[in-house]
Image (cartoon, rainbow, N blue to C red; front, top):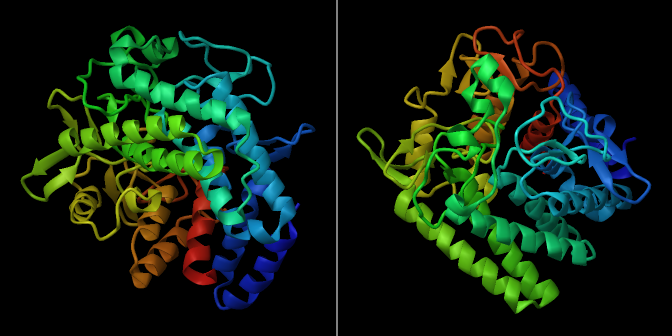
Length: 424
């Protein structure tokens, strides 16, 4: 199923990476992974992209899974149609339910857990995550900027933008929201990360200007409702919406709504989302509730504090980012683990002492130091457990112990990294 531009890229990779056969093999495997294993083009022109070993489409994952294809779109109509079809499908999903993070291919009520929330037959999972509404806008904006093709900005797309803006505004005052989520099995398993406390509302928050998120991009429940990296991502994509509204739609109403919301969220980040650390100075918190409580950590999943330059919120040389980066890439971050095989950022979503290939790739993508990038690539290659692909989390002392043997997002991000370092 490889398209012409990918075949041409692989021919070039054969020459560029000839002296590193393992890197060449894994780069090809990872670059082709989404297209060869997760994509289904539907009869109506839409594209359904599963996350890997789960037969559902996450708005976040599906966006990230095609990120590395963007530089090829202008010269590859077949690949362009696949990504455009994904954007159309994501728009449909948002218009079905803005609070859901993952969807079925059809109205079949397929899901593994029956949660106490508002469900319909399209929904695989209804964990409300701010980033789930950000990623499709990022995907569409970058598609447009890369291809100059504005045909994706349909009336359905505009309706989805209104839904996103309304949802973000509603969740600035979460006490007025009707969203609830409880998972009964979490009580059996004792996993608080799978459900929201306070009868499904989440713990109380104070108004800050930021917008509330029930869950992190790991699909774990937030401890405090204002997830800072996701709010930063929202600031970025609201800027994208402003540009689309001004240049494509010439719609002053959407432009003004996005501009106002962007200012309020960004002001809330600056006013409430930093913490004066005794060792690192002022850093960004991962979460806060607006009452003066902070979660100081980072998670491997993106958006993360580590990923802020990658997402476009700050420059990698920004002083506040650099101090935050020093914190999160240290053992003062409770989810930074080190062992005999590797060190890096993990997640409460996976066992202790498991770090993620996504985090290692993101660490490399957010530094301009070529030596550091190549060292991280070498470390990633040495921790694939002989599978010639990326995993979710792996044991820092024994990479043969890992979660998710088929995780397309991790494959795509590593392919993007290798492309950036060796193929650009």
